[in-house]
Length: 141
Image (cartoon, rainbow, N blue to C red; front, top):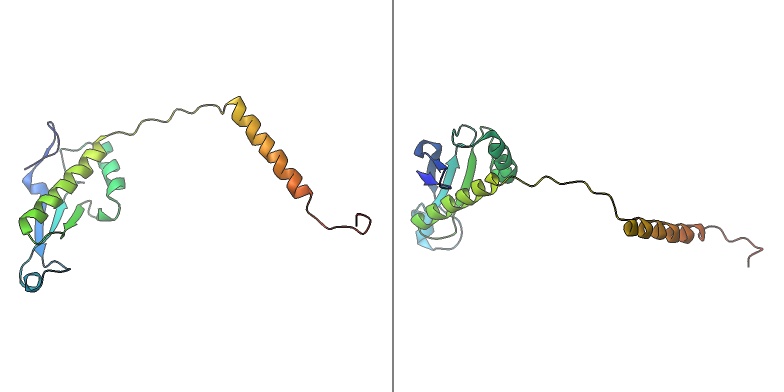
């Protein structure tokens, strides 16, 4: 069981862990010990998350979201399998907590009078620069 907030906990059936050999330095240890952790969370089937939270979670997860609706998190930073398990679970908790926060609705506002005037002044200057371009006639030279 994984606690996200005081109200939300993820059941054990929603989480599966698989272990594989890690890449990177570590000498002979890397070749014989399966320290890398792949944590899989069945987000789409989870009864603990609201549909809006699942939609935000899908957007936040990006490439880690599978076609089956699961989130796959891989941790292989340390040489300890236990520490990698903790890291993977911490990342999942952070991801779900980020999805729980609903973004604030943007309230449309009018541009200020000053910003409108600045924009028009800049357009006028740019127009003069462009009007000054063009072929030079013999009379001007």
